[in-house]
Image (cartoon, rainbow, N blue to C red; front, side, top):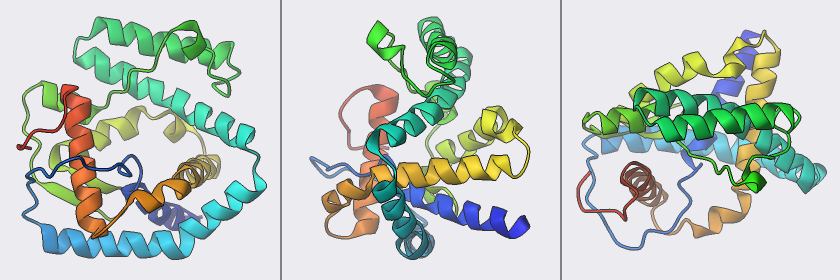
Length: 230
């Protein structure tokens, strides 16, 4: 079981690509004082992805019908509403709290434990939020960019935000081995969704993903196009 756990944790390194595969319209400045170390960790993550996770994701996509993959995505997205709710709550965003909690309640019941997104057609759109965004709204600086061995690109601020998110993640309430099965399915499913987007990554992969990640984080926090200051 310990070996299985370690393998699954390494697989999470694929998330260095998740939500980063996007084109950058213009260059921005960045805070990357640990670039040599980050590049080494990035290379490790990329090797794990290319030789372990990506082949599994291709096989999963081949044998799993698209509607089933969609339901898997909906299920884990619904679990993410717990994070969205708590993050909005500590930011005192009452409207977003109500929206995220309503989505969680509706999709967990009418939507068959989140397998079907019933809330969106009802006009209750997802309001993504995380603890890194909450810290930003509290005025905490982002800190330097860092690539984590298991979790990929982060800022120091968003990396710290992972800690409370792990505590409230419903998956962590499950017993072993179900918890690790759920983690594995979530990771492979997420990686499968990125297979067709890989062609968007051009030039130096490290720089592209770093810049895309930082731009996306700024947009999530401010709702505005990237500016030349992180």
